[in-house]
Image 1 (tube, rainbow, N blue to C red):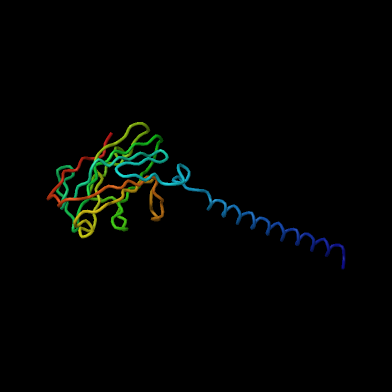
Image 2 (image 1 turned 180 degrees about the vertical axis):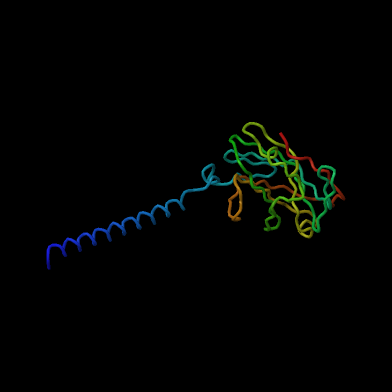
Length: 191
């Protein structure tokens, strides 16, 4: 074996080891990135849970009341559903600037996103630090789940739940009872 052949083999072996080390470091970096907690986990490892009100991390939520309705009126327009509307009168406060707040209602283990038939003023519906918002959150649910009254959970989390896996920051339990009203005028969440 010549010196030139040995040097080529040594260089090839070094390149192979460098490539293996680079790939290993990339795998470790990706693995560590997947372990970094999202915003919900950074603010509080466990959701704040309460009846009527709850706080956790930067979010505080108070549910002042719940109403069941067959239809809602938003900005003078009557909107109907094939199920029932659950309208929650809430106050949401935050001690930090939040870009988005995901809002879900859990009824009998089923998750319902806030209804697109409710108000949609993005800027006014999110609290600024120290400036809470109050108004109605609207959810369309299966009317059969509300028959005879039931307990519901309002789940709020900072962020956008596109994948459906965002963990709630605040969970507020409240009772929904009584007959459905024909129509409820919606108070838009505002500062």
